[in-house]
Length: 404
Ligand code: AMP
Image 1: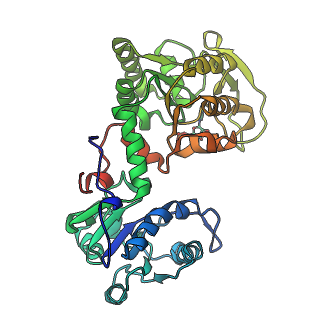
Image 2 (image 1 turned 180 degrees about the vertical axis):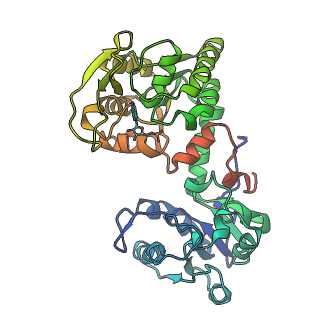
Image 3 (image 1 turned 60 degrees about the horizontal axis):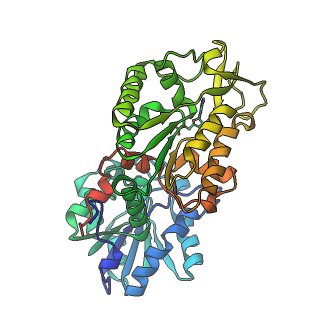
């Protein structure tokens, strides 16, 4: 049994029960209309299961950065409308600036089996992000069963993702959360091998613990993107004006020697596509020059991996049976620095029978740019939550659920 196994909605029957489902309805809304409803659609299987049981469904979510104050621009009302269209069923929106009030509770108590309501944006209340116990109790007072299906916020201990569970006996995962947990859990417990980790992006600071933890689990670790330059500097190379975190050079040295000790390979770029001035705007055309690191010009900044590096990374991926990718190989927002991320995405799409897992955020955009989203085994719905999971830290939103 996996240590990540939690009870799910398949372990319960919600007949005539009030079921509070924490969803991730943090969707982009432009002029009052939803421009991308992927996150809403992703929760439908969980909602349908509870409808089938004959449960009484109370949906809740945050939207944007309401910072503890009601903000009409951040109301969840458009989400209720969209949900009603998708489910072909009335989803009653219980607007209240306090989210929960006696009139909201009255509406909830008069629900019938199969009814669905949606609460107002949880972050209208400052107590939500503060994980305030009294707000957690208010949320708990709406339900008999708590379901967490919001993986995107599972790394945060908020009242609706963590605190509430203390006051509800039955706390289970929805299908979306369950899927994320079982796939990410597989990476840390029994990945098909060879298992290759690919890390990129700009913020080395955010990914330190992951490098440390992934080295224990994967067979090879490819490091590209902005974070690679600190590693290259640690090896004594000139990196010019490329992204560099001086304070982490010793850490990079430590990781390189940890890899050696564990007999794992860390692959770093051997060449880089560079320019003198950072493109402004980000997608502006700029002159580029490719350097091998041994010959790097100190006036340049590296913004993508070069062709030799692409070749070496492709080779390292040959025959991989499991890959997790977090962070682009370069400034992929600019066409001149996109090739590295594009080639990685295409290579992953060609790996036969491999479990390719894209860890949220910009890597998801890179995969979509390369037009291979549907060829991936799993696209995670939460960047921050995936990172925390891969660090080996137990996510509060999972920890609070009933264990199998
Ligand atoms: P992160 O949030 O850490 O995954 O970083 C993603 C961002 O890193 C994207 O906006 C990329 O454009 C950026 N990035 C990747 N490689 C580089 C690089 N070599 N220099 C500057 N930014 C980069």
